[in-house]
Picture 1 (cartoon, one colour):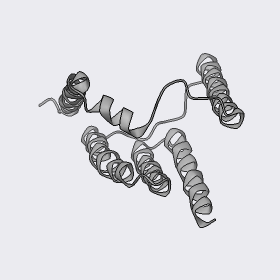
Picture 2: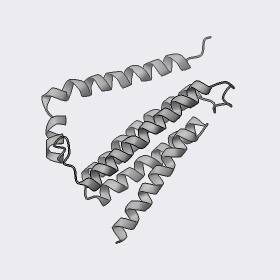
Picture 3: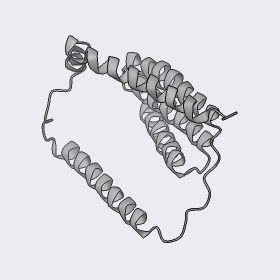
Length: 163
C-alpha cells in the first residue's frame, strides 16, 4: 500500500516538475526542475524493484549530464526568455497538434495496458542489456560522446568574448 502511495507521489512530482521544465522562462530554473524530474524517476525505478537503473539514473543523468547542462548554461550566461512576439499562430497551432499526438500516444498506451495486448517487441531487461552492451552499439556510444564534446566546444566558442 505504501509503495503505491509513494509511486503516485513521485509520479506526480515528476509530472509537475516536467511541466515546470517546459513552462519556465528562466533556463537555470528549468534545468533545476529537470534535476527534480530525473531524481523522481530514479525513485520510481527504485520502487519498481530496479535499483541498478535507479542508481544509473542518479549518477549519469541527474549527476553528470545535468552538471554539463548547468555548466553550459552558466558559461553562455543565458538570460531569461522575454515575452513572445505577437502573431505566432503557427507555433501555437503546432503546439496544439503535438499535444494531440501526445494525448493519442498516452491513450494508446493505456488502451494496450487495459486490453492486455502483448507487447510488440521483447523488452526484457536481459534482452535490452544484451543489445546495448553488444559490439553493435559501441560505435553509437562513442559517436554520442564525440557529439557531446563537439557541442561543448561549440558552446565555449559561442560564449567567448571578442577582445
